[in-house]
Image (cartoon, rainbow, N blue to C red; front, side, top):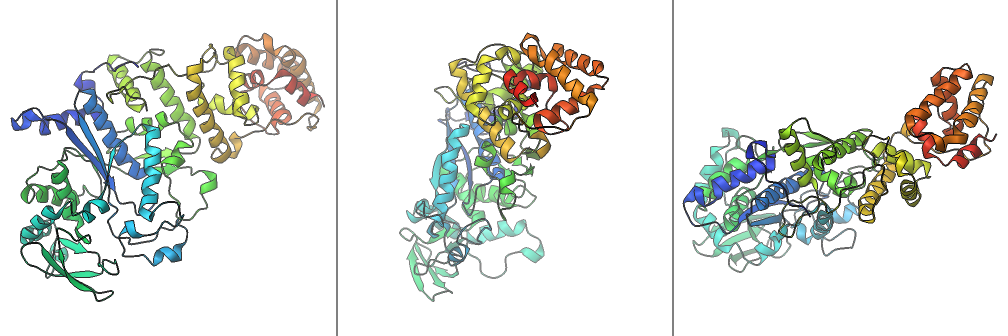
Length: 561
């Protein structure tokens, strides 16, 4: 693998900017201490339902900064916290066995059964779905399960610290609230799941100033004095829990969504709590924006409550292009993931970046080259042995997505036949933008196969009807007038019969226009007749390239009637 060429910071990617900021603000030069052993970058979510593609934005944003730090030779710990000791508040609409799940409302998520009967709990099911797919896009965090941490009394000292600063915490939280939303009455920075019925419908009754916390349950009537050092049911409330974990894990970087970063939001309060109560400076951060969805996959559109998750996106986009969608957009910019015809444009944009990175296409200037190359590097799933960004081992074999979709449909959506056609006809790809004249090498086939699978899925499940086509079987008749019939016969005799003799699409197109002129037709009239004969539609792929991509004997069989 080829290591990256370090770029000047002025031409850096946004992930490089934040990596430099982390080093500047959290490194030894910021505190005058010894060399820092490693940086800790964090992300996390509550697995209360399907982890959707909007949640993925935080995960990959952290991954990109992690890679940028490693590219600078820094050691990084990338942690991902599953907040699976949060309360199960609502049953998502897309979950099975709704009535059964309703019985577990107000339980910790980790104690809710898996409605699919696959994993040990509802939380674990949602966690496993994410942990299984992240390696496909080159993301490998260290997972922390908060249910295990709390039940093991890992945070006992931190909970006691919060209790000791109860009044101070209340003042800090109220500082960011208006009069109507300030905390009323007695307030505790902790909550409890009942040790008998497991619900969080409890009230804290008192604390002895040491380790004993008294609470009672409003659901079942249970009351007890729990030892914080041993009790499994005690946890901190969210606005204290988050900054506590920053200090506990010594987090240097963690982004958050625009809701958390709103003025007076949870990040503002967490910053103060972290420093004033736990004596740790809040991590370097940025705000990431929401993601929109354009053109939902057809088979999913009728599923009430269905969200788009990473596996859904990976059915349409290869892993590198999934990364590219996020790498090429600044995190504070809202953008849309498309499943409609925009998919073609996204593949084209990525292919252009790839050609620039490999030197096959010239960038506007040196700064543009460095920017596109860096975007391409960070878009790759592959890394070197030290976890640094790296170019692929082999230059990918480019077949433009639009053309590939046409080839797959010509092959009746058979991927093996499509790849075989590419191997046998590489010269016919040379006239396609970004195409190549060479036969794909064995090491290039896995990436080509992955693109074919995405194209096939997109055609069958997402593409608009006017983009889809099917070659008509031989023997079917098409209603044509005399001029059109003459034009089709000329097309057969003067173009298709010798189709192999055309060196490119341009020379073939010129011959098609000559046939139209000889038949007394406008070019578009002959095109319409040809498409009707071949696919039963008035429009289709560019005719010259289309004819050159279909087996000649197959076309002649279709035209026989």
